[in-house]
Image (cartoon, rainbow, N blue to C red; front, side, top):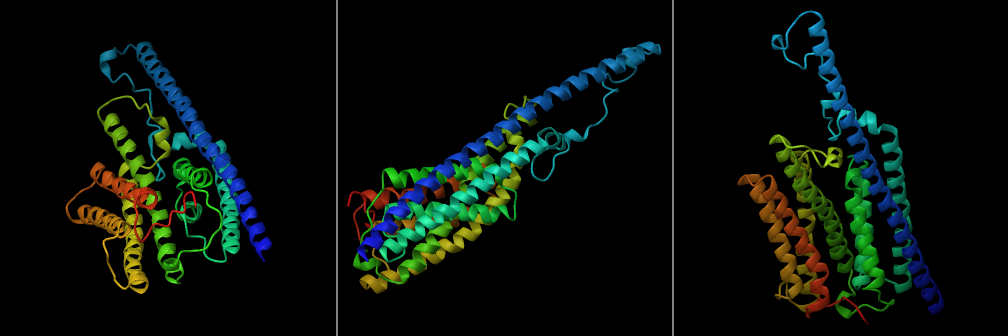
Length: 357
């Protein structure tokens, strides 16, 4: 039986390595997708400027031929309104879609397909880790990172079935890749037994909801960062400045990003509330009290307060735009701090990092 467990552990690590390589290739594909779009947008912009100049010259020539002076009408009379200035619901203009078109669909689809393959392989790696340990694989930092990154990938792919969020691929898959690398390089821990406090069915309930909620928070973090960039770009364009970030044409406007982030944060907040409640129940079962001001408990509550403040401020106090985005980002940084720094450097009843053991 011991040989079988060791075999599962080795297979899990090998599959995790394959998943990491697949995520790396998918990340490159998402980056290439953005680069291709930016290149096409620049070419399209140059083409529009050339067409506009030609139209102006043609208009001037026509007026000169008929004896009309330049004062008789606007110089750009020869330029007709173009559908290239009409933005679609996905943030890409009609002209951009025509210029980018088929190549973008191919690159983006390849990137998503690679993400699916990587997630499937990683899923098997997580399962084999659990079989090797004879328990759910959530007992140390290595297992938290591998399972958490898998949850982020699944949530991202599921949301893709409802919304075209492929523009988030670079950021989301980049974070997943970072978590997988950190797990393999910095947090690797051999398969071992759980401490007595973790040997409970509440582990499955509490940690699974926490990981799922964190996955949703990861998506909203990426959206909030993009919202800040998009908001700054829109303000610059409104001020009459040249659009230097053409790749952001692929991203919905700042308001759309904010609204979607708000809705997803609402779902994640419900999950985090259940995480806090079930954690308290588990603490009472394990240690005979619902709350003990342990570092992990405090930071779980801090995260709840930050996101509660975000939802309340945006819904009732008019905290919209960049302020709402920054609150969402601060909330996610608290999540990262809770899952990394608190686990690794703060002693307490929740010291399950397993680093170096």
